[in-house]
Length: 258
Image (tube, rainbow, N blue to C red; front, side, top):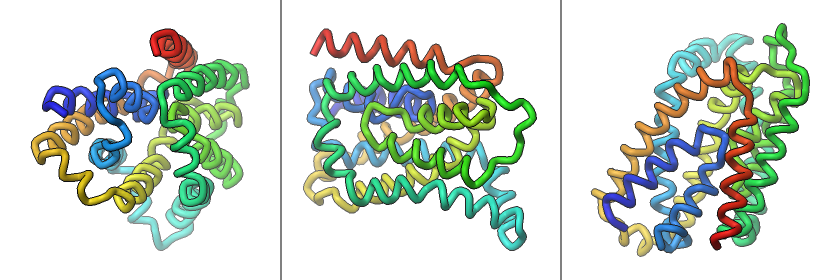
């Protein structure tokens, strides 16, 4: 892998992790069209996801700080408990079916098909009415969002997109659903990265230099920060339809050229 390829994949990760267009799907497609062996690049993928995780912690620093400050009262404990409950489905799926799912879906053709399906879900989610007065998110709301996050373990299904869409299906406003998605995603990204790193063979990590890994990390971090900031502003007045159309288009183009 060259330095330029590392920068490009880091940029791709940072943009697609938070924009609802599937980071895992785009990374596989990017590695495929750059003629890289994506099965041997899981250590690099972990580094890119660490950059995205740090971006969430930086952008939502005040929110995470408030949770920590209130950890000993009901408000803080309730927030932590809801995040914990919403994380359970992804943990169960990740520990039991991650390898099987990866072996089936981690190829360009399957990812293209899944992207098209995800795009159609986005259009459908926007048909549900939004509750403008809904400010309190229930435990049920969080658990269903957690199920959507677990399904997004399938490469090609956007984690942020699926969780935001599930929020929309429940009447939650887009901006609020996005905030929940990102905060919940920090746990998912950390857990997925840790799980993947434990499975990486020592000789795999030796194939990439420190310079290559660092370039990908910095590129992912900066692109992630910009993506989060832009999407939070965009969703105030815009629908997911534009992302749905994009996924359908990319999926169709990929099927044509593979």
